[in-house]
Image (cartoon, rainbow, N blue to C red; front, side, top):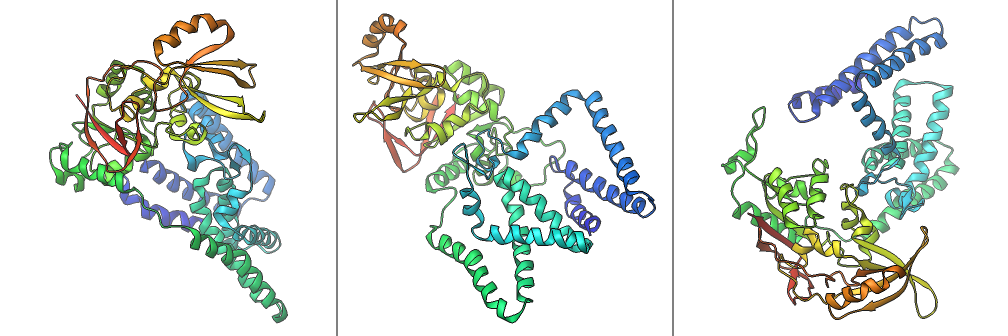
Length: 474
């Protein structure tokens, strides 16, 4: 059954051999089918199972050693990817472990995804495993190993739930069928238990869940504007639906936005994104959005032939609660050249009741970043910053405490007082993400060309900022 499953999958994906990276899947399926066929043929002739497995693992060990010796760089990349099966970061929510919530071990995400069905699924996998040991059957054993494998992958990465969901449904159905075949007096109890564990939690959750829209109205406005008001990157609108030649021609320009939005830009806007959910070029996009001056950002945009920049309200930290879970901190997962602490700090401060509460302090680098200068200030100059403050910090390497905070009416007064308190650990900050603590020059190569309908914040220049904004880079 495994061999036929691989051959069926191979027949499905083979027509897409020209698609990027698909050749790896085709090679893996073809190689896997050939390997399983060889193992099956040899296992029928092998006299000793111990010798069989020893000879089987020998070539695998030799292949790994040869790969490490002949392609050390690629082998190191592969070894770095192995821990990702236990969950990783990179700002990708679906790559986090299903057992982690806010950095701590928790079973609640598992219950959120599967409800009571996870209990029956695990019980069903145990039953299938016990039967596989006593009475092996290739078809039933395939479901057992597939379910167990996808369960382990799901606990490692949230995105694997779409594989495990099918296995969970099959295993729950199998277990329900076995329970239904049990004595009559046990059927009713089994039926009530299944309804309570599997169906009731999901029905309640479905009733409480509001239908969502993705992308939202503001993003749809931006994407449709992009399609209708920007030049065709390949010169012809029909090229979007054409079969690309190989190698594909290079687009006249690309659009810079955070990688989360790449497929939207391509699928609805019909434009070429600089980066997309494959995370290709995500590092360059992060470096551009965090760039501290216009020339630094311009160099990245010119290298990638980007003509438009899209920013939205989810990228800057408009709310201090986004300091730990928002998109802005995720930028630093991709741009390793800069430190998050250089842009903002989280310190604890005692409130009136003596309780230590977190406080977000925005540093000058935050306001100088291209992202904030575009979204918050619209690329305009900030002549009179009103958010200047000096924060007195006590940092022992484990805890950072905000001892005192002195606010000033201007940057000049704050900077005049800073040398006198530098030895005491004071730094220039702002406590408001919309009020800069430093002067900002106007951006000269970025022209606002679109803003969506929804107003989200008002900056210190008393300009209302819209949910999604598009700038043309000249």
